[in-house]
Image 1 (cartoon, rainbow, N blue to C red):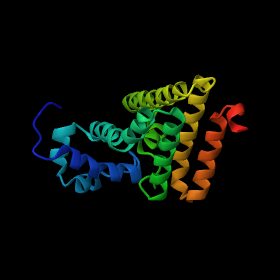
Image 2: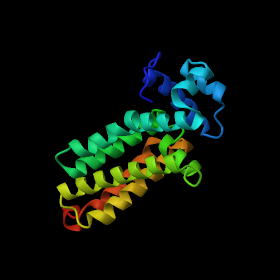
Image 3: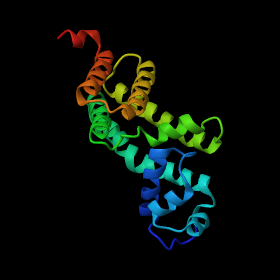
Length: 193
């Protein structure tokens, strides 16, 4: 894929993201994808090889543009717990404002294709490792006990929110889930103060 593109690749991929996100890989017709990208099928196949090659590029673009800001929030906060709260607030905002109305494209792809597409499974496994590591590092910054177990727990909470985002949750329900997760992170001596 080192060839020069005659189109804005990021803009085209952003168009494809919406179709794959809404319909999944199997349910996304190539013509609808091409229309959303503003390209003809020949250009798409020339640039990405096939639908699967396009989908892999879409997942990478999605993770970089939609999920990267959340990871940056986790890493940039001096307080690990504040970074975790900021990450979950970012997820909650995406759910409430409709940016995650179809859940998380990466999570959806992983669930749909993990058993049949090794490339999708690898991309998402690496992403989940990065997210768990970011949670772990944030917990260590605040010296929260058993950061390995709690990072795994937070990964499950994040993925759970990504899945139930499809159910049109209200802000209060999402906030209750986030608050409950944060309480589980707080050492008992700090929670009692």
